[in-house]
Amino acid sequence: MHRNVPFYRHDLAPQDAARIAEVLATPMLTSGAVGKSVEAQLRTFFGVGHAGLVNSWTNGAVAALLALDVGPGDEVIVPAMTFIATANAAELVGAKPVFVDVDPDTLLLSPAAMRAALGPRTRAVIPVHLYGQMADIGALRATLDEAGRQDVRLIEDAAHCFEGSLRGERPGARSDIAIFSFYATKNVTCGEGGAYVTNSDEIAERMAQTRLHGMSAGAADRFRQGAYRHWDMTRLGTKANLPDLLAALLPPQIDTIQARLARRATLAARYDAALADLPVRRPALRPDALSAHHVFPIHVPPAIRDEAIAAFNAAGVAVTVNYRAVPTLGYYRERYGYGPADFPVSYAWGEGTVTLPFFPAMQDADQDHVVTVLRERIVPLCKRAA
Ligand SMILES: Cc1ncc(COP(=O)(O)O)c(C=O)c1O
Image 1 (cartoon, rainbow, N blue to C red):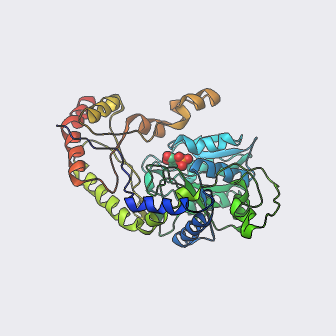
Image 2: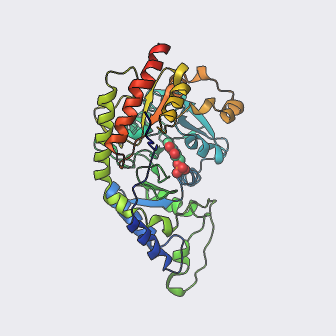
Image 3: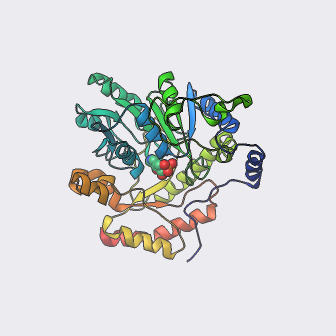
C-alpha cells in the first residue's frame, strides 16, 4: 500500500508565468501599479475601506503593531494554539505576548478567556482564525467594550481565513485590522506575501508608512511622472511591501476563490464522512461559520501521534503538525517559564494533532489513499493506545 500524496501542491498555471513576464517588462520590479490594482481588488472582495499588500503576514503584523504604537512594556493577548508567528510579531516589537488557552471545542480564542487575561498593560489582542474558522470578532469587541477597554486594539490573524466568514461577516469587518498570509501553502498564495484590510482611515495611513520604513511615500509615488519628490520619515517602520513580481500572481486566485473553496468544502466533507466512525477527533465548526477550510487536522492519542506520522510517511502520505502549543516551545518556555499545565487544551491538542494532505488540486484517488492508510494503519494504533 504505497502512493505518494503530497501535503500540498499549488495550482498556479503556465499563464501565471506570463503575468510575471509582464512585470519584468516594466522598469521597476518593486511595489507599483500591479500591487495597487490588487489592493483595489481586495477592497472590493472584503468590502472594506482600505487594503494593502505586504511581503508576509509576519511583517504585516509587525507593521500593524508599529502603526498602533504597541511596543516595550505593552502586552498583547494571543491564543496558545496557533503558529509561532502570531506571538513572534508581539515579541519582535518588544511587547509581551500573553498566551491564553483556547476553547476546547473550536480551538479558538473565546471572549471569556480573553477577558480573564486583560490587564492594565494590555494594548492589543490577536485572535486567530484557526484552520479557516473565524474567531468571534464581534463578541470579542463587545467583551472589550463591556470591560471598558475601548483602548485595546483587535488585530485579526486571518492567515488561514481569506474566504471564510462568521454570520456573513468577513475578516476586517469589526476589528481594527485583519492580516492575511499568502505563504506557499495558503488558500491564496504567491510563495511569500500577505495583505491587510481595515476600515480605519487613520490605521491605513499609518500602515502605508510602517510597511515601508516609515517613509511618507513609496517608490512609485516618489518617482511619479519623472519628477522626484522629497519624502519624510515621521514614525518607525519595517520593510514589508510586496513586489509587483509576486503581486502579479494574486488576481486570478482571488477571482476564482469561491470555486476553490467549494472544492475544499467537498474534500473536507469526504474526509469527514470517511472519519465519522473512526476514533479520531476534529475541531468543532460553529453552525454560523463558513470555514475557509485551510487545512485538515485530526487528533489521535498523543502516545501514538509520532508513530502515526511515521506510518503515514511510510505509506507515501506527507503530513504535518499544526501546531504544538506555542508557549511550551523552547523560546517561550525559557523566556516566560510557561509549562504544559498552563495551557491544558492547547497542549493536549498539540501533542496529538496530525494534519492530513488537503488542497483543491488533490485527486479523489489521493484522498482515498489517505483514508485507507488511516483505517488500516492509524486506527489500530489508536485502538492500542485507548
Ligand atoms: C496562523 C498563522 N499566523 C501567521 C502566519 C505567518 O504567515 P507568514 O508566513 O506569511 O508570515 C502563519 C503562516 O503559516 C499562520 O499559519
